[in-house]
Length: 88
Image 1 (spheres, rainbow, N blue to C red):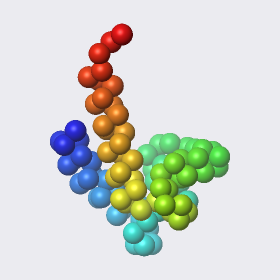
Image 2 (spheres, rainbow, N blue to C red; image 1 turned 30 degrees about the vertical axis):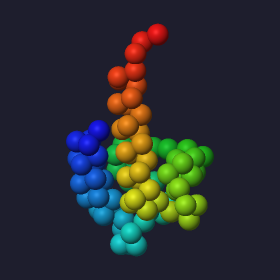
Image 3 (cartoon, rainbow, N blue to C red; image 1 turned 180 degrees about the horizontal axis):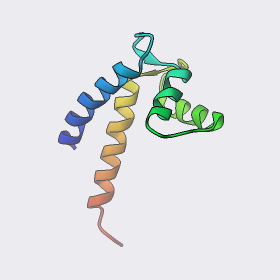
């Protein structure tokens, strides 16, 4: 998990800065949608809204880098837990 976190912090920080077109330190809906499209993901308006609300922990209407990192860390920890869980 620590290795995943270290790699994720560096990569996400670089990508985030690149995608943050206005340099505000957070991603608005347009920046987020553009980032998704640049990664080959075409999402509907509803999907964008759902993903934004999941990532926007503080409810500001934008995604800060810290919010994104927190969710990615949580996802990484959940994946690790699933891999080591005993089969029933």
